[in-house]
Length: 305
Length: 289
Image (cartoon, rainbow over all chains, first blue to last red; front, side, top):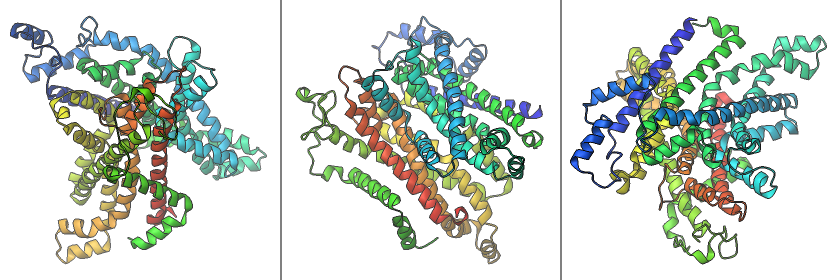
């Protein structure tokens, strides 16, 4: 319980640091969001600045913005003045959430299966193949994998639509692409965890009781072996969030990532700041969840400190 | 540290590592001597040969504007490799400096400096970098050509914390070794011990870490450029080439070569660097064996 409180405080500090840095970066930007337009008359410029409170002193802008973000009322986007930043981001959440959750689920399931097979067939060809694929899945950029899969599954053998987010079929390819990296990560960690656990005394006891190799791996070694997997849930989630930016771009999925990148291209600062904060908060929650899960899996982690 | 000859002969013994080093040498030399190569590096557009498949004339085919993909990949190599090296160098200088200062000082200073690293590590820097990239977009700095330089520094600034952690940890161990204590007893100032005694002993660790940071910087460059927030046209990198490829991706006329060749170049370079890094670690770090 104390751990949760301390972690939450640390998370809040992180979120605050991200907000402060973002605010300073945006404010120190050479040129403003109105640069591209024709030089407006002084009065118009002043009115616009007053509307977005660009004329207040820096510390007041900082406090105002901080307060408006806290109350989830960050005001309108710079590029789409009719829409609130929170509305735009909220519109993207369902697609991104669905994509992320399904990909994470698929990644964990696929990774677990591959990891168990690799540990079971250790040093034989299934293990070699899985290890090779896992190291490729981790070291190759996502767009390379996505590009090859599109060429193969959408164009060469036209089984799946290459882009869009309308039918269930169009969701398959992006979910697979996004799931590959976590699957590779899980498979690799689980393989080494399982191999290590299968040399422990309790695994030998289970084997000598007459449990089969696979049974020992699944019912005795899987739980301790999944501790390193959960401890990397935070980094994995971060990798998936950045991955979703690429995937949403490639497959034209109207999610948060697409608005984020579009906002960054248009220098729509409130929108970008909102997305950065959203991702930061999400990441903190996922990391906290990973820690809780680890405490459940490994009683030793609970009493530590 | 072992003599260079021993390390090299150990590296060349493994055929995979040998191929990896060969590939990296080719890529680096291409990047360095590109202007001297006897190739027509035209980036002129020629709509009569737009989206041509690989042929005798255009080895890797042409892109949507009729530019030769092979020469564009070579030009991209120059910028991508420059990004990788410059980013790793930034991470090297920041990380080693910070690690030495933190690990070589008092416990209290060490504690607070490492808390700062913890804070930096908890920040999702990728998103902040995108924010910075969006701020830099179209600014006067970018127009003057300084954008690329800033970009290099950003790439390095993301990856300095692992280096700082590793160097700090090793420094704290090494400065309590007998030879370091002996030097202190002889009256050698701490700064000199750190610089002249501890740092050379850190070299194997630092070399391995840098080899493994370069591929991460390359990946990050490709990621940003792919999203359109990194290297800006007319400059070319492996990431922007892939971006161009996806823009003309359609089922009617599949320009597979536009995706395949830039991706393959990047993938081979990443694999080679990772292989070399792992191999170096095995050779230089006796604990691993």
